[in-house]
Image (cartoon, rainbow, N blue to C red):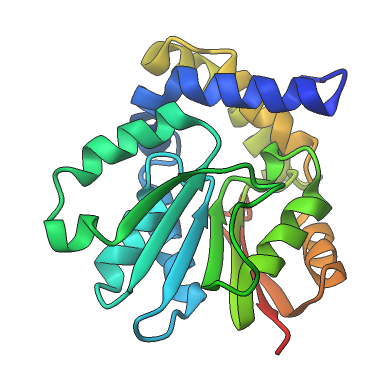
Length: 242
């Protein structure tokens, strides 16, 4: 899938996630055989949040990562879930209403564009995102904003689907991604085109080592990544210099 302009991609992504919001979580569980929940646990562990820390979850969607953070770390002072697709956060807010008040009260929902975050500099002990970076129209700008709002010594943690490698396993994954996922997505959500965009966005994205280089370019230190699920998903971590 190609776009004629950054504005066209921005609008498409927003509208696409709005259409699939109510079935998004269910589809993620099916598509990954439940592994997405394990990845989010690892992501929060890698954030290494301090006692009484503050977390920003970008592209929070329905709040999976934010809720995982509050479950793992009930001592956190605040978790902000930010997203530019309001229907996704509305689904998340309905989930939050079912949580214990002491947990849900620490969760703040914010309508925000990842390229222009409405937060002051040096505010968060960690800035995390799950499946955001493939969807932004300017990777460098998105990373720059994440570094800006992260405290010195804090961590930027990114969970993403990289471009499949040119290996036998990579070709098998691409076959599954392009042929099975759109059909499954159409059956579950009624929006097969949204799940055709998913594999095409991965094909157009960076390889893990390329995203690592981009993170280093914006000033992050000790950048590294771990490949998950037979190298089809990557978890990146970088530390903001003090």
